[in-house]
Length: 128
Image (tube, rainbow, N blue to C red; front, side):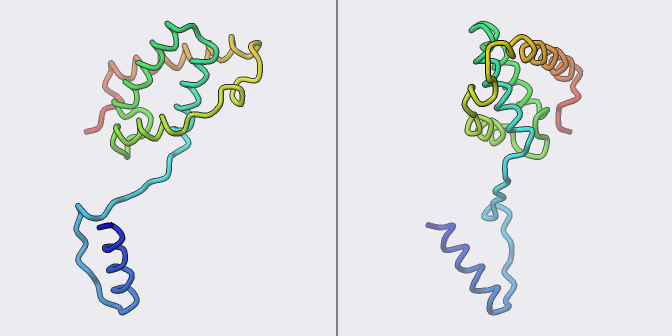
């Protein structure tokens, strides 16, 4: 309700031509999910579809660590990126058509996992 009132005040002021002071706490940016966040959600689905339960759990844990370290999207808060990744999950049958595709997908995920672990431990993903 408060956002609707603020939006109404902003629109009215813009039509009349009055400039309003911008308060950093009341102004919210609603950023669209990036391609990297969609890709991260797809990786998690592929890990669940093709991997063993142990691999899925390990990949999910390392994926969350990569999000927290800022490797997926450095320009948004990690909690917001995590929520976005969870919301963007697609059907596993859309991403992996058959079980024959799984070995290649798992090899790619294992390589990605190694690369990310090295980046997290070296501190490359951390924000200043």
